[in-house]
Image (cartoon, rainbow, N blue to C red; front, side, top):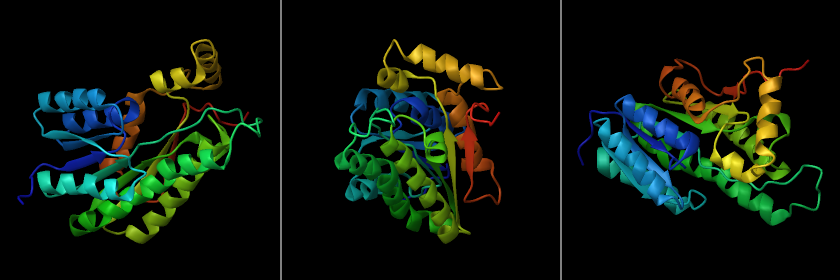
Length: 255
């Protein structure tokens, strides 16, 4: 197995949205890219094609990161292809849209499903990649959410799962240093089809405008602006670990 001279990144859930934006950014920065998808193979292949046009190597790998064996398989593909992993971005996530006041809208299975992907899956990816990164160093960026900080968002189960991810972020930063840095970003509302589909065409514009009106920056995040901040933690945050960065244009600042 030869070791690539080019750095390597694994981005879970990178067939669309934030994950795809991170994968494209990595390709522009001359990284080889492992693009992970669960069901959207066509989207993943489009991201791979973009990476190839930037002159780097990339591969799309279907895997459900809720399954531990799939997480080890993802890391195995990166090792077999390039002999190294320098950055892991834990972006894969899921939710169920349910008003927080609707106490009958969620059941235990909803919590288990969201935790399995949003928290346990991220842990499993960290566990799978840590031995590889320990050899030469690396960075891990967990995509959490303002929901995990403020108890808001698409549902109570989602907020709890992202709060759990932030606990994993701190614990793993403490245990994996100094070879591996572990940090997180916490996006607020992010422009895109995922949230538009979840909220519905009628509600989405009103929610978007609400957050724009609240934000001192006058705008919500986009996949690309979130990716820019992920990239800071991936390659630029020297001697920083265990931190999380709130990305909402100031919308949740207290009045």
